Structures are given as structure tokens and as C-alpha cells.
Image (tube, rainbow, N blue to C red; front, side, top):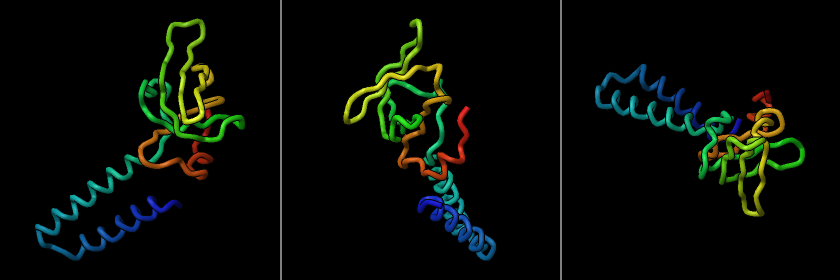
Length: 128
């Protein structure tokens, strides 16, 4: 379990205990605000994108079969309407174009938010 997940879990547990014992309305509103903050933190957890959700100029973590180490990338072009549809990405050492038809089979993108997907998250998320 990564530090972010541990922190969220600890905060949730603490807030439940505090919420059961505190009846003050101001503190209750503060607890609600903290639960909303936790919800925002959870939304930033890495998740596998859909092919349709990948957009030009957006950042992702690119995971591919054994050929490519998972790395942060920026989508620079999504080619539709060609004989074969490709999506191109750039990173610090160059660019790569991958066939859209292979998405979920040989490669996939994770949301880049704030965190790299952990090995546990990657292993727990099945490929198509």
C-alpha cells in the first residue's frame, strides 16, 4: 500500500471516530470538508484511461509490453481516419507512435495526475 493510500485510509478512520464523538456543528462542517478533500485525493489516484479519453496535449503514464519501461509521456497527436489509427507520444528521449487497435492489448495509458501507478495497481488492473 503506497503512502497516499495509507494517508487516505488513516484520515478516513480518524474522521469517522471524531464524527461519532463530536456534536458541534462547526466541527461537523469541518469534518465534511475533510471528507471532500479525501474524495479529491482519491480522484487523483492513477487509473487506466479509455482509448477515447486520451487527448492531445494531455500527460499520461505509458505502459507497454516488455519493450518499454513505464514512463510519463505527453500525447502529441491522435491520428484518426488513416489506414491505421495511431497515437503519438513524446517524452524526454524522443517520440513513439502506437497503433490504436493495440490499445489495452500491448499498451495502455494511466492518468498522470500526481502519482505513477504502483506495481500493485498495474498488476491488479487486467489487460483487455
